[in-house]
Picture (cartoon, helix red, strand yellow):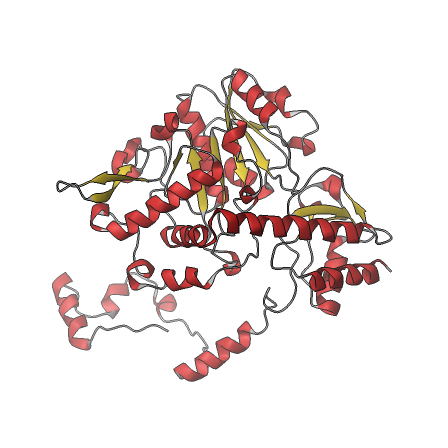
Length: 445
């Protein structure tokens, strides 16, 4: 619905101010045949009728509220406590944009400061910025940070093939034209990542848990990267860090990822949240904004925008990033989520994901024709080889059982044709998992 408040007299006054006799005269340079095309629109609807129409269209969607979902691959269905929405809908937060006179917005700055503090605790890092658009953007900005740390003298980026395929694509898009070599993930990464490391390497990017959900010790990769002077960038799932060793303890230099699972919901694909944490010694090369705590002239606690060293509104044409706008409302959701759950609650969520996923994998592996892809430790996602094409199985699950199936790995990894990536979170009950097992058994037959 659009409401335009201008009256006829308002329009006449504006036209007079710019010296144009009529509204039509504004468009006289547009060819006559294109000015007022026949739109063939249906009759106008009342607000009530329009609402009915939109609700009817919305009902055509099958959402995660309509049936069990076992699809992850970067966007996850986690429980969102009611307190998250209650805080987000407060007018002072809900209507606020990124503050360009930040110190006036003490509440917004404090919320961001608390978010940054909890992200540092979660990742084991020293500094966090005020967030990015999504995990893919944060990963690409981490690459540019690494390039700047090396004063643009190193031109190689080594990336694991088990980093999210879309993140890898965004890294390449972000850095096109910069003369960088992005290597390591070609041909499914048949060579070891350490074979690519040399004195021209700016950074090594790995994912933890990786795209297939597997958990690996990153200590040796960190040592290998640091031995040649490269930075280690770790893409991670923040929910997993409620249970797993934080990347900072492995020696990570930059930790990034998608924070959507912490209070944002799926939201049909957005808005999402890219978190970004870094070692303090590299803070001036970090993109985005950093909120700090201080005291005012009266000694009272206050918050300020401490750093924004790479952005175009500060450095103009010398800027090396244009991500000065953080996803403030989604970062607030993550802060409220982490504060509400606390250390114990977040660990409990992670434990539920872990145990339910392992129960699901064990049951599915018992079905004739289905095989676990490997026996490595995993968190909440696991890959299985299927007896039929994944698309066919998913269609059967949806149409016959009302179940959203897994991700078709053959889309991104040709050698994993007929393999599905299944995700289980705390939101999947035992009954849902058992129904999936029964449905897969029928699909195999």
